Length: 297
Image 1 (cartoon, rainbow, N blue to C red):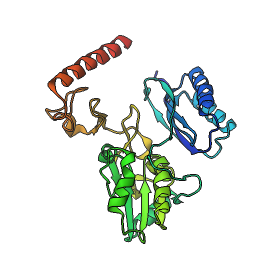
Image 2 (cartoon, rainbow, N blue to C red):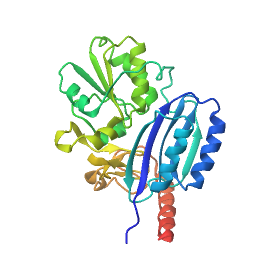
Image 3 (tube, helix red, strand yellow):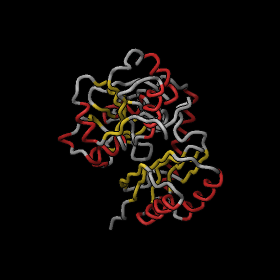
Image 4 (tube, rainbow, N blue to C red):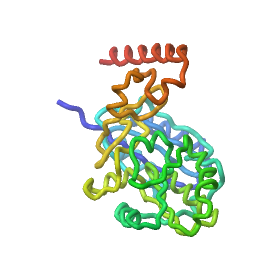
């Protein structure tokens, strides 16, 4: 008899939080009681997180957040057969997604597009499509024809805009990210800089993969997610990638066959960036991890 799958909820909302510390204390206690796992970030500008648990626990959390005034959340659910997180973390942050420069995502954002509208826009020839995610996320999959900024952190995005989008103020700019939250800030940034035709995919890649049939999709590959599933595909089914626990890159089957791949120690992307002493420490860590899970079984 197989156990019931866990429900995974990805959510965010930009909304003023008067006392983030008090909200953090309340929600941590509530979520701990529900035996949820995952991460929830709380900042003066709102909440952002991905958490997993039983169907009843996720429903209870959703209801509590609505009671607390988060009535306009971007909220989506998927499933996982095994716990996608090891523990629960509820953290206080300055920003729920760190851009590093002041923007006004509650007052000024780009035009939201449904997945169907997104397909129509991408079919046009005068559109610059920008993937706002980090390079290791883009590696797992992206929209056909999208520009990859080759950034390692969202903090680098404003500098990339200054360098690469200068002079494109009259063009249509379409942006996307995993769940939509980074585009709330990236489109706000562009509008502040004088861009006018700025669009973003509402609900992000996850909503697109959930709603758009694969035969109508303009997406290639899988979508990196920040949990134990590593990637998901159309229908939000778990993908085929595995994560390098040394550098965090999503590895496909061919990369896992590379002689540079050693689970928990190295992969083709990081093997030359760590010393032998570091690799030895990673091997010790992996042995402890393997022993822990063998004991659990």
